[in-house]
Image 1 (cartoon, rainbow, N blue to C red):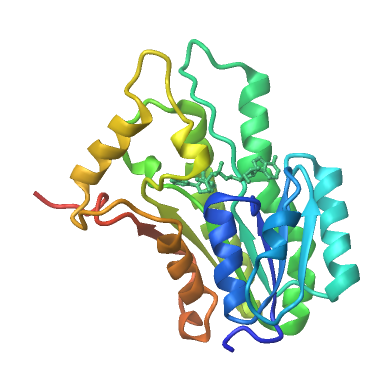
Image 2 (cartoon, rainbow, N blue to C red):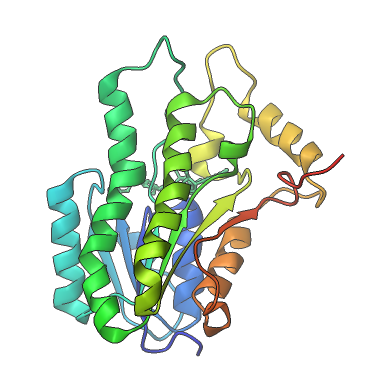
Length: 252
Ligand SMILES: NC(=O)c1ccc[n+]([C@@H]2O[C@H](COP(=O)([O-])OP(=O)(O)OC[C@H]3O[C@@H](n4cnc5c(N)ncnc54)[C@H](O)[C@@H]3O)[C@@H](O)[C@H]2O)c1
């Protein structure tokens, strides 16, 4: 299998896109560590493939818990070859409603965790001369949505992706982001703004904007992940891949 002998760590892995990432990496032969604030054990038991599997309960917004998760992975596997930073929270708020506590929580989970996991695993990747970091960004950064805190956090994820690519490329480590379109996961289906359109209305509107006229599924970003972590993507770094059925294409 393509990823035999590789160890992959995925955050936000108990459900949704993160779980699809785990399934794909496991099916390609990797050892998979699923990290989530909700116990990922049930899903971990169902993962395919012959590699080892481990579930780690961790609030990635808490630096001490990230340090403990990194230590647990290094203790069990000695390395992380593929780091997939996917965990995120997405509370709606506008400028009048935002609090500094909410802003900091979203930054901690969506952005700072990427920094901390990357710092934890980069030394091992450098020593091996090979590594893959893939962050989950979002197409929201290119839209007219009023989604202040989440949109800013994902814009920062894109910038952090490029900054990490600048630092790590000379060590054989690529860093890219996958920016999904709208995927009907549990998290996003439950996302409604008071007085705003229902989740169903939002999904229907986005499908209209796509040129590929079907709803996205978690396997769409997972397919992009399989490419990004493969040897075929060895010369691809610092990129934001929009896997969105064409929503963000430009032109008249
Ligand atoms: N679904 C979409 O339409 C869509 C679009 C663009 C980007 N994204 C991004 O894709 C990623 C996955 O989203 P999803 O749709 O699968 O959402 P989801 O809510 O279904 O899954 C998110 C997972 O992250 C975990 N998580 C949340 N906070 C955490 C924390 N503090 N520590 C550890 N784990 C935590 C949750 O428990 C959950 O298992 C996110 O980064 C999201 O921003 C999703």
